[in-house]
Length: 464
Image (tube, rainbow, N blue to C red):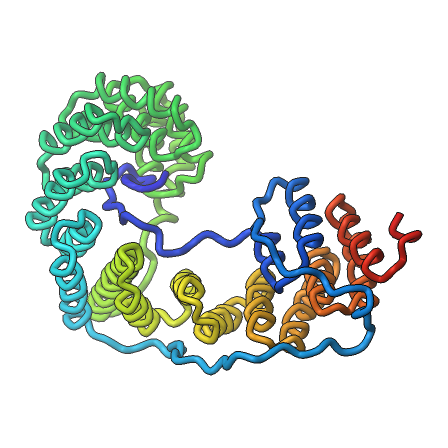
């Protein structure tokens, strides 16, 4: 589920944005490595089409003529300085609970003061208040978000989740029904309506609503668990057993589902199943032994850090989206001081720097990403792209060679190297890499690349 309710059927506040960008298409990264010829772009567009992956279509400089063919060194382009103005934190900054909570409020309030009528900015403040248990203020802020942006589902869900947490079930149900009246009839909305109805004791209506939810999205475990709990309350034991087992099948492994299944088994007279669920309940118990005060302090600091990291991540995206790039950078770097290995934030910064044409800083971000995850082949190629664009062909070649070293059985690195060598006019070497790529993954695009290389090398007969 995209958010809203956990697999234990409890309401969960939903962040508005995901601060961990999805990984880039490998071929999209590959075709951006160097300024290559239009013919080569065409062949890789064909290759991508055969794999249904979108690629850039911008026209590139012409390929070198056959007179430039060489197996030796290409003429080095003018170099751009890659001295970065950014140093990425690598050691976690120590902070106490009170300090982190105070900072979370400062960040949220600063954002809202700069964007007082921006529902996304107000949402960050609401999220901060909610997670730090100031639920009354959070409720006011999310209701304001709904006024400003009545078509944003997240705001309704968060008002409902916050209201359910506060015991204001009628408000939750009213808000969700208002969302549906505005055309927001998603599985999340339906689920929360079922949850609210169940809490109000209207289990017949809850089951009716939740059956529609599982029909819409049958792979969501939370739907099945809540449906099973509601059916159990109505004494529909066989239906409850089936729904709860479906939740377990889809990944639910918590105490609540085992308690419900134990209850169902006992009432059905299934002693064997009841014994199994008793054991699972015991296994799910907290077996840790530690000083209680220390455990509470550690958990409290962990929670405060989680809230601050969430607020910083959300705020950085809002700043970026409204083109307040200095604030976006500063906020994201602050997050990395708390979580130096937060890969998603490094990705966020690399894309921010790329959008501003800051090659040195983007390279620094990608190098930090490679320190965190050295096996990210696409990121090696993205680093190679920067080195090529900045006029460092040797370093670019070295970055691509790492990909062939880490994944010798995949075509990706060989194809990238062939493309790069074509851009340098080194067709003899490019031919070898193109052939290696085709040995590993034969495709129309790869064949077209090899044909392009052979024609540029005046090997017309072999090209045909």
